[in-house]
Amino acid sequence: MSMHREMEARISRAADVYRPIGGWIERPSDPQPALEGEVSADVVIVGAGFAGLSTALELTARGAQVVVLEREFAGFGASGRNAGYLAGGQGLDYHLFMKRVGREQVSRIVRYFEDGVAYVEQKLDQYGIDCDYIRSGLIRAGVHASQQKVLRANMELGIELGAPARYLDEAEMRARGIPPAFLFGYATPGGGTLHPGKYVSGLRRAAIAAGVKLYESSPVRSFSEGATIACRTDRGVVHAPHLVLASNAYTPQLGLLRDKVAPLRVSAIETEPLSDAQIASLGWHGREGITTQHLVMESHRLTAHNSLVITTKRLDYAYGSSTPNIAAKPTYRDLAVALYERFPTLRDVSIRSSWSGYISFAYDGLPVVGATGDHRNIHYTAGCSGHGVGTQSFVGLLLAERIKGETHPYYAALQHKTPSTLPEPLQWVAIKSLLGGAHFMDERVNRRVRRNS
Ligand SMILES: Cc1cc2nc3c(=O)[nH]c(=O)nc-3n(C[C@H](O)[C@H](O)[C@H](O)COP(=O)(O)OP(=O)(O)OC[C@H]3O[C@@H](n4cnc5c(N)ncnc54)[C@H](O)[C@@H]3O)c2cc1C
Image (cartoon, rainbow, N blue to C red):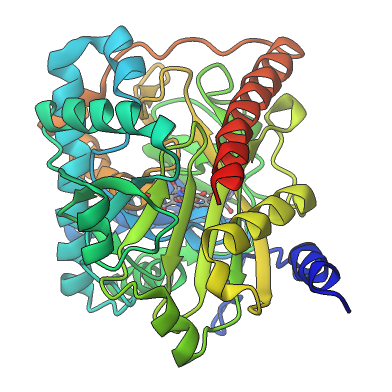
């Protein structure tokens, strides 16, 4: 086969190695039972991702009887499929935030993202979760000179708002061993990368050990309102004075937050483990997770077993806020192209798996955390816009305190009026156009990079 055809075959392979449950996680070997019959609890939580499990753990620590209902298994959603960046407040959409809530509230929200990192680090220790966490810090990088001005301006605004970072010129990037495709950037000192499958499975283990009643294979079909809520699955019902919807991108399908958040599909590929020589060829000794300054970023990180995981680059939206668990083949192809272009020494490396998952976003980019219902006892958290490893864990503390009658200062900081989403088909047209425009602009940058190389 010619070099070109070999490369084409490798790129195409990305679509053939699709894993419907993501690359990090397997179905648990100790599946928890499906809900059967009637059960009572102090709090019923829908969804066993970072948010649902963290809320359950915080509530249990405060003496509450907690039931978690998960339609598949803990970690089936974005929590088991993400890139594993434990990131603070840098790289957020500050301009979008500020238009909505003003600078003072944005800086409190940025500090919430920052403190989410320390929260997760502390919980890893407390629950004894080994998830290959390396506190490497993270790097936001430019791949073309045209990205420098925006990258630097965003970094400076982030610093003013409370998210520390340090600019790295080309010499510093090379001195740190950052692969040469990434020309300049900034480093955030906090956070790093972890194995999200191990993290969410660790939370699941901790929750079961703490006495949380976790029911898996138990999709919630409906819930009632009232002083006591009835939360129904196919063969059971949980009665509780509080309900927490920790179902994130899937919440609109339960009839709530459809007017506040829209789900977006995010995709990933993982290579086969790299050989020692291939790792050495990268020179990337600090192993910092790297994201790029595109409108829709690329993210590139090494894992503890020396594979490379590349995510995002293309986002997608399915009509009617639906979340089909299907392959995004053209996106896997684009991610494979990014792999071979950014890391030319890895042109012989094959792709081992590809997958997709759903995040939710509000039109103002801000988290959507609050309570609704006549009794204000239907609590929700969503809209983390792809920054949920820290915040969707930390929100568990905020929700637990709220249910116990206290208001954490960060819970107060997150309260604001989320803009209403558009009805269909307008939302589909608007999001598709926006994403199409962003992808077009990003591809323009990529073409300029190709011309320079
Ligand atoms: C490819 C990808 C890469 C990402 N990379 C990063 C990253 O590097 N860093 C970062 O901070 N964030 C990242 N994110 C975002 C992050 O993963 C999410 O913000 C976070 O996991 C959300 O956690 P959650 O618990 O709110 O939701 P989820 O993990 O989605 O959990 C929701 C759960 O609810 C369950 N559920 C849904 N409907 C029902 C129902 N009717 N009944 C019962 N259960 C139900 C689902 O099965 C699911 O398990 C990424 C996301 C994706 C998809």
